[in-house]
Image (cartoon, rainbow, N blue to C red; front, side):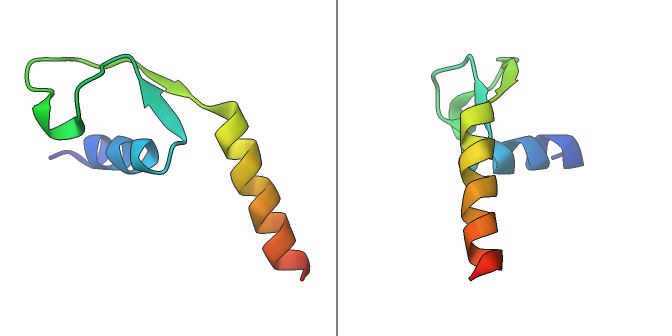
Length: 55
């Protein structure tokens, strides 16, 4: 598995990116998903980090 694939899967697992493929990660053989950034999820994670850092 390439570094890019591994990193995209990690980002998908935490909800930062989404794909246009409805199948789970392990069942995508032969499929080339298109990735999109979930800006709302990133904003939420940044806000959580700010709260933790400023406590």
